[in-house]
Length: 235
Length: 235
DNA sequence: ACCTGAACACCGTTCAAGT
DNA sequence: ACCTGAACACCGTTCAAGT
Image (cartoon, rainbow over all chains, first blue to last red; front, side, top):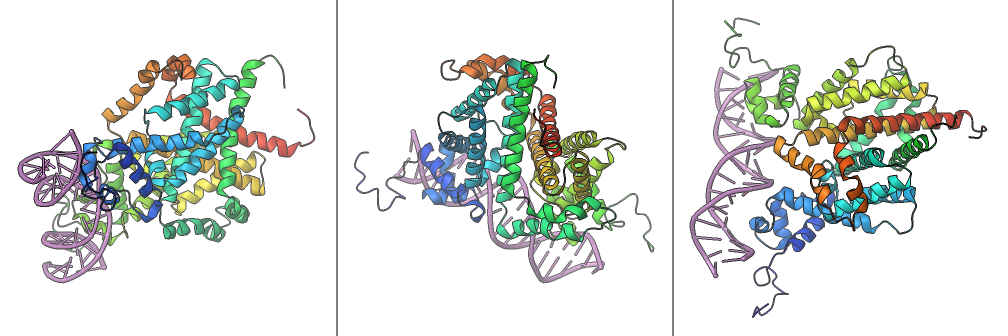
């Protein structure tokens, strides 16, 4: 903050002072551009108006930067969850928020899906899911197991969606036409089920699939809690 | 097959004749080495005893090669499913087989989890799952939706497991210690659920999680079929 | 104390040249 | 008709040199 005459106009030289937060901000701006802009160290330098290698002064390597970026996006997910929901509502809100944020920053969502960030917001998510499964009626090892089921399944699903979203538009269109076109042209003798359902297969939407998946996870928790609560009662 | 004196000893020059199948075989050999050996075009050339760029004579690019390799591994999964199982058994066998094969060839499993190969064995897998959900009692749009739920969830889960397996041993160990160590050192006031369950969290196994996830998918199908079959009957 | 820029060891892919 | 090998346009990261 000493003399530096004007650090607004030419941001390159004078007011450089890179900070971890500024680097994370720039990373999110690039990530939000999806498949239009690769998330590279050189691109990041450009976005910051600094030398590409400057970030190594603030993060050990690209992986550590990505973990920090991921934790920030986890914060966005947590902020999107309203207060006062019951356990099912909280899990649904977490699921919807995770998908939305993963599709907003697809590079982050796809790269971090199989990772553990071990940063503050991750702990808050764990706490949230554990609270939900305990409110549902699970305890101890059962609560821990079902937390992992929800967390791992959701993260995997959302990560794959983000990875798919990262393809450029042409590659995605080719994949999608598989459902609408190629499944209709299949040998009816060898593949009778596909033949019979080719029209219905083309009409399933991503939203329906996600809703069914999240619903399956919630039902599993509910059912397990019921079984443990009243093991005597016949069905 | 003309003169070529000896194509056994020095496989490099004489008996070159690369074929797509030979390239896929070599790819699987490299993929099976997991994190010990990167799956690169140059490594593939080495494994084949040929110039790295020779594969471009048989595959448009690395992505197309990977899709072909993936379809071969799908064949391995299908071959591992025994005859005569009921629908639940077939889905479980498919799930177990997919996980096993994805962990056997982690590069393939992780790269292909968000893709559609549109090759023969993929159609056979679709046919199998559709048959299972129809045997469970679902039809039309419901069968199509639940097929997608099973396929997408399973593929995502298995793909993430494979991606995680691709880290080298040190990085994995660091991630695992998070469960056993860092969760015990958390602020009990801010994160009471984690504090209470830190011991149980450390003891959940991957096998339990996968079993719970697959069970949740099967239960969801069963429950939906029940609801559609007898909509009148009260619970 | 932080940033720069050349350099290194990698990638996937193209293309003229060989046989 | 297929393979070779130099070359290109990229990567992430290191390190001596600048300020």
